[in-house]
Image (cartoon, rainbow, N blue to C red; front, side, top):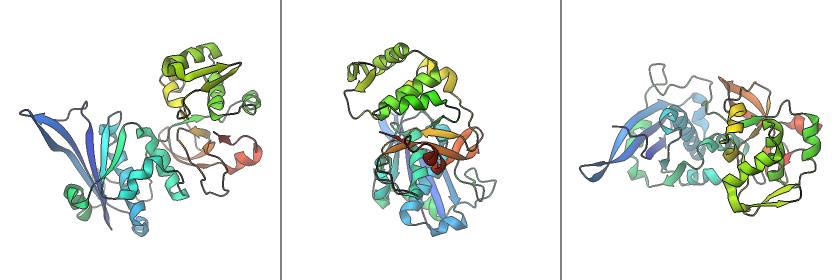
Length: 304
């Protein structure tokens, strides 16, 4: 019997022509821990994906499994078990290439709840069998993927398409990414600086330091406060379900893309702006860096 309060284990495996995932839970049965299956999914890959290397294929499998099992995993703690050792470093990848960037952004939704663990291949007979004898990619398969479609993992972000010029005038004076985020929160939520400060104090307590009109964080590991601030009532009212449009500019909730290689090599880490290229409903599912934005605002590439 499924128990949503208990962590999940998700076994994944990619083969030359198929993907497989097995979702398990460890429950207490007769006073003993027992690991049992919740569901199994499999599907054949698309012809264009057959050219992927081993690591890209495992990443594809993870993204596919997260999308298809999102109903179970959303808001839950879970462990991803893979026989691909390189996949373990995906959450904290410092230099994602252009192929890995969207995947890296997409899985940020699960950061804090998802752990990726490497275990040897003989542990994965459940997922191995599913990938080697994958079900056809047809509409009667619950794990069906439309040919030509990318997995529809929502990308969390903040719409800054209509941000006014007064905002840019302020943030150009900012000396850190934390200050930029604070300016943005003040602008979008329309709350006072004191209200925002009270909210941040409740979240971070003594890790905050106030100097003049600036707010600093004593703990240098805190890079991005947006996830916490989204939980506040004021933020929740206006940004809980943002409706994005294709070509909107957004800031993406992600961490540490250091020394990324793209059309231009960026000297610093960045969080956008990204331009939305595809939607699934009202969720952004495909984004790319906005070169046009960089040309228009050369002093406003968001960095920390």
